[in-house]
Length: 349
Image (cartoon, rainbow, N blue to C red):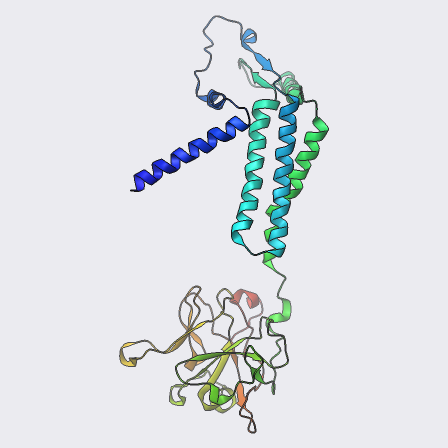
């Protein structure tokens, strides 16, 4: 079955190649010149008599070349616009692929129908000297002989350089800004309420065993890197928080909150496991689904598995006596986000 599919795919590729060559008016045999037997130096002829130089350029070929270069540039510009305003990966790949395909076709056409075709036989009795270097320079400068629309082709090549070059540089925008102090200057502070994604207050009674809730700071931007927290309830007898974190100040009723941003690569903590058969299963844990960093919420979210380099920063909690709403009891225990954000700061979770 695989062999049949491979044969069918190869047949389709050959047909596409033949169609492109026909459109460009290129003889397939010309692409195989490198496989032909070289001319022997022992045939008794003067090497200079075997030198050939043809100028195959034509107005139609030059217009086709300019069109292909402009198309490559326009598809590159389309990639930039799609990258900025659309997130469809298939359309992005199609635009960049068409740009590269047009550029490839332009190079093939230029090599076969526009650039001078030369066959030079050169004897090499010794290393190249000044006279030979000057001769080589003259040959290079003569490489544009026979081209009548130089300005048109140069302008089209400029369009290609701008469009395709911009398309290759556009993804650099995804590196994002320097986080600076964003990993430490968070909207969380003592007395700020905890709400859900819809802005509804999260009560202590909303946090039940064997599940987790995502919270955000009340009256603050939920899009900030440090805003989301993951909240779980741990039995008080299991709590083993790091030194200095008293349960009544950090985990009222066993409710603990940690930054939702994984300390490995900045992904979102989106899983919480709580095995049904405890004697034979690992402890309950928060899990990042990207690379499976696993954190123990009962022990200050210390890393128990995976590539994360440090614990999740913990947010101290309190419960409003009148409303029962969860409130922040201070700021995070450390810098949020991947470890490399604060590698030079000596920050700890």
